[in-house]
Image (tube, rainbow, N blue to C red; front, side, top):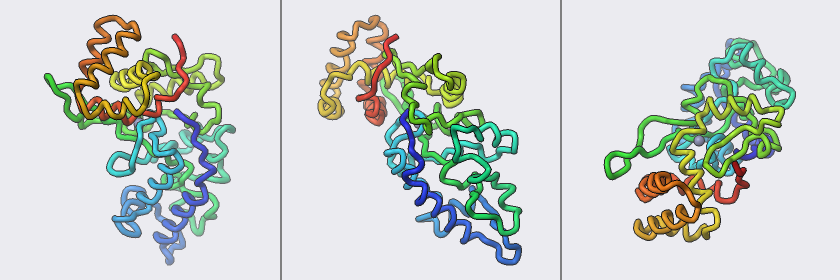
Length: 293
Ligand SMILES: [Zn+2]
């Protein structure tokens, strides 16, 4: 994960929410019936909805990466908006996220949408949580190829990040500037919590509830570790030629001194086009610091 500095794009994000609220205001009742699944996704028009506008701002804010797994995102059918405080949250769940380290979630900034929607002329400096920039982050769908005989095909169900997390606890540790010392990436592809961090428990939940130990993710991270000293251009170009790609993978795996079975498994997987394409989406891992296990 990388530190996400919400402050940089907050003005733009909040402006989208406020414009949306003005658009849905019911004058007779002097209130704003927030509807994330309908009006937020369809107004002012489907082509350039508030949802799409918000997606653009969030992707810019996150340098076009998934908040959880660090997959590269374009915003074109590969991005979903994650609600940190879940859409269906009640006051109890809201209070879990209202911790001192996350001032953007305190009562001066955010309110449950179901409360906000029924208030007469609510103060617009406190925004409804389902459409509030601070409560939204861009995530991937967690889609990976699956092996089918000799080839690989696109899997239709998500295996990590937003959709598998659902309503489970996931404190946004990526809003903390020292996230790199809270979550550690290991040379075997695993992601672990730093047991010495005050956030160790929350980090463990975050990894578990967003399934960041999904097999393909672990394999992809391990391959980036294996190829860490290879020129990035050479890695990118290897996609054009399956034979040189296989050589590149196998040679570097042999140098890594892994058990033979692990070498064969990884080589078999990543010589397939679909796995390799997916692997390249995770080039963020090329330049990280690895934790030796
Ligand atoms: Zn992801």
